[in-house]
Length: 212
Image 1 (spheres, rainbow, N blue to C red):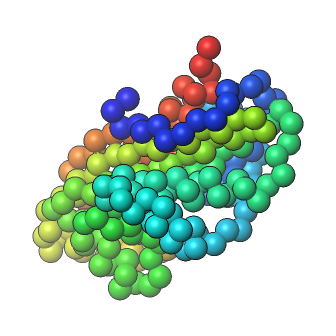
Image 2: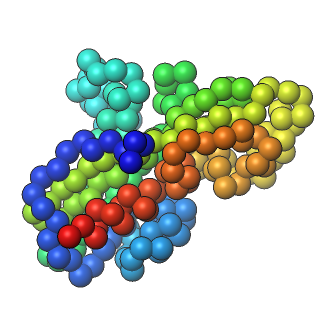
């Protein structure tokens, strides 16, 4: 698939009887239900510190690749605090929005949300979701990406954005939006996997879990 980039693979996936999703995200939990039964947990990591170290590690990479690899480092770090159990597969994920060569994280206030969402109008931005699959003798990291084109900047579309912000479901989302919640008038087109934008590329994960 042209929207998937393999990053690293150590060992081979052995048979497993349990799956643990290292995320409390309701969206990721709903998506993973489509392919397997699992438990979910979460870990507390310093994402800003990991970002800083990853930026230095990948400083010579092309901008988009560098930012995607930063995202991968965060996915990997989410599993590290856990004591890995036998016969258990751990899945962690992280999603970032890249616009004008910069990562847009979760917004802090109304003005930041409005700035983020209006900055997409009339342009294409990227949504990257990284995934780490890990067990005791196996680790595989990859990322998927999608291109999202917002409709043109008009007074009507700005009003639609403000109405969306007023719903209050923006502050826990990278890049300040969930594509499934937006007024569809605001989206001109997407290229790639919709679930990458929502937060977990379950089709790609399913392929890797069911390889012969």
